[in-house]
Each structure stands twice: as C-alpha cells, then as structure tokens.
Length: 346
Image (cartoon, rainbow, N blue to C red; front, side, top):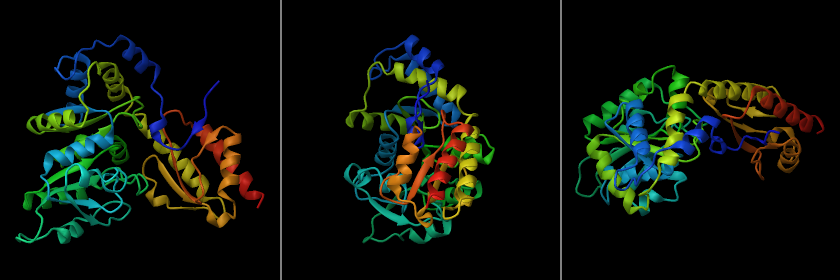
C-alpha cells in the first residue's frame, strides 16, 4: 500500500531501497578526526561532480549557505543577494546574525538577477561604504518557481565579479535540476562560481545532507566554521552512503520530475480561473493561483486530502506544488481530476 501523494516539497522524498542497503552496510569512523571512509568518499565524489577541489558534507542546505557566507566574508562586509532568495528571505536572518554582513538586495526576474542590475548595486570604493565581498545567486530559484539561470547570464555575472574582485557563491540546492533543464553537465554551471552548495535530500532523495564545494583551502576554512556551528559529526558515513547512491543513480531521473511538473502546470492552466506562469515552470516547481475559480482553499485542500493528496494549501489561494521521486504521471492526473471536481461544483 503506497503512502500519500505529497506535493508540498521535494524534501519529503524517501530514500531508495539501494540507499537503505548502502546505509546498512556503510563502513564508518569519526568524521571530526577525518576517519570516516564513506564520508570521505562522498566528499571526493561531490567535489568531482561539480568540478571543485574539495567538498564538505553538512546536515542542511541552510548550514551550507551560511558556511559559504562566513568563509567568504568578514563582519561588516556587504553581500549582493536577490530580493527573494533563500539565503536572504528564509534562513532566519542567518547572514546578519552569524556573518554580520549587510545584504544589498537586487530584484531579479523570476529570481534571476540581471548582471547590469548587480553592477548598479555595487558601491564604489569609499570610506563611508561597506565593502562588497560576495555575490550570491540561486539556481534553481525556489521562490522564482524553480527557474534556471541562463549560462550567458551566469558567465556575465562571473566576469563582473572578477572585474570587481568579488567572490561568487551559488545556492545550488537544486543545481542538478538546472543542469538537466539546460541539457548540460553540471560543471558547465558550477565552473562560473567560487563555491556552490547543493542538496542531496531534495530531488536526489537522500534522507539527510547537503554539500558545500570550492577550493581545498576554502573548504578547509569552512570545515572549522562547521565545527563552530555544531556541524562536526561522528559516524556520519551512514548518511554519506545514501548521498553516494544519490549522486551515482538519481541525477538523470530528475527529467521525469520536470516532465510531471510540466504535465501538472499545463493541466492546471487549462482549468478556468486558475493562473499559472508556464514560462516559469522550467524544472520541478509549479506555482499557481486559483483565486479566480471561487473555490475556498479549505475546500480544495480537504478534497485533495480525501484522495490521499497532501498539498500544503492553507488560507491563501496561491500555492506551490513540487514534483519529485515518488510522484508519478498518474498521481498528477488524479490531482488534476480532484481539482477540476472542486472547481466544477462552484
């Protein structure tokens, strides 16, 4: 008997049978001493996948992003961030509390910042101004709808950062989704940035963990910050084993999630009163607004729940559905039928 059809996030993915087996059999040791062979293997594999010298395993993407900012900056520095980016909007103010940096906001188009707008935001050298040390980009952009940064935009941002001697970090929680959407090796994306964080526990379906990658020197400094934040782990190889399976077996199947998101988005857009920005549906995230249907959020949420569909619909009429491992095309079709049945009763 299958579990619920859960569209709330790709964070709800469950580990594959191969991951569970690998976790059971993992060889482990104390990671703080550098003695966990499985975790060492994961970090080497992760670095190779994204074309960096070294990588660091962290419990969460938020910790990875915070470590990235801590390692790139000093207190009082300024950091360029997109106005609705995860590192700014939904990490509990960590960049201010932990790093003591000043965020300078640039509004992107569906989360993608125009390099010309970034250039305008950069302050000139002046005794009165905080020094801009870091630009953070998000790829794919969660609040933008899972949108992908075009490679030419990323290259132009890299050039700007080099001209101004500023570091460039990518919140790449779903960067492998971006690579699949662009039809390129992920290294074609990550080569433009100094550091990248990516999640193992979203579309790649590992139960826990993210990676921060960069130069060996940079990751060495980040490792010390991780210890300060309580991220020094012991026999973490049990978790790393699932991450290895994720990187070795779960990358190509992300295209299935994208296809299901497109199927869902087009089906929703065909329902009178529902608004979907189809141009923004580039990966596995679908935002839609059903205010034009007259359906109450509580009624729609309850109808979906009766069919075993978890939607996360609350009081608002604009909501997000995310496709992932465990969501099938048949699940999408069932969901569309339930939504249509509620709308047709109005």
